[in-house]
Length: 351
Ligand code: F0G
Image 1 (cartoon, rainbow, N blue to C red):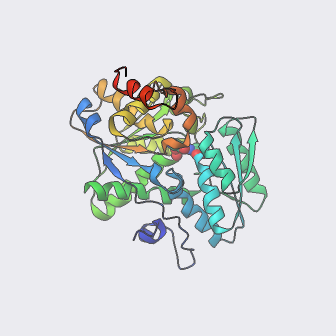
Image 2 (tube, protein in one colour):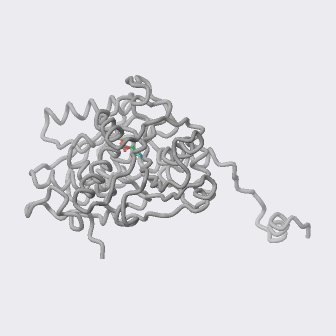
Image 3 (cartoon, rainbow, N blue to C red):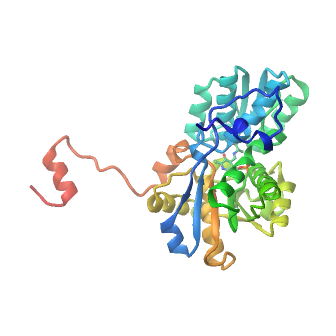
């Protein structure tokens, strides 16, 4: 039985006898081939389905570690800023561990499912008239002045936990892929994967991928090399104008001979629908920046044919039901409660 990241990957993590074995059985997520998309584009594609984690996103990998260390250090409260997934994960682990959890979110700009989670897990939620970057500034300041532990990805234990996804990718494939394609928001996850690939390579000679990160065009601070004061994208999870791990993302890019580029909301939505309809995989819009970016880079010739590519699908599609319903061309056909009417609608034959 899988017993969670601290148990399974303890030798790679900053854990001691005193670290509590906190877990919601996070990690061990599927690495699924995407044969139809692979055939369309001439690649060997896989998706790492991080939406299969207990709260439906990759954040659980980092959060279990950050929360366990907070408990070990005697903390009784945690705090984070969030575009939604971090707050859902923090709230769940805090509930499990019996800690107070304070979250700050951009009002009206987080997907409904994520808010539902934070509410259910019993977090104290503050919705500010500002964006994620404003919220992060606010919680960093509070963590400096009050006895609360900051659990955003600027907390190094978050990165430690999140790097385990790279281990799982190498184990599933037998070695690192040619390319790791990943959405970039605050840039913690690209930092974590790169760290994970390097550590696993040192231990097991598993090789290193090229790191390809993708921001949304409306919040592409790293690509444009400037802070975006008013970031805007339908992919609210990565609606971030001043990524905290900016420098580390650049290191991952440069050390791996990779790239960081941007994708438009239209490209994201197209990839979102394509992935669901062609492969039966429903990931949230921000996650699909990894697919949209790959498509862009195959089409412009940057990614060679036959490349083995792992796309990180960071969050579950059910997190954001409104975008799915708004953007889908499929609408329910409303009919009477009548079999004959139903049968003629399905078969196209009047009875
Ligand atoms: N994908 C999803 C679904 C996310 O929720 C996030 C970040 C990212 C990608 C980007 O990851 O920040 O490590 O570059 N969400 C954070 C949050 C900001 O508050 O939930 P990153």
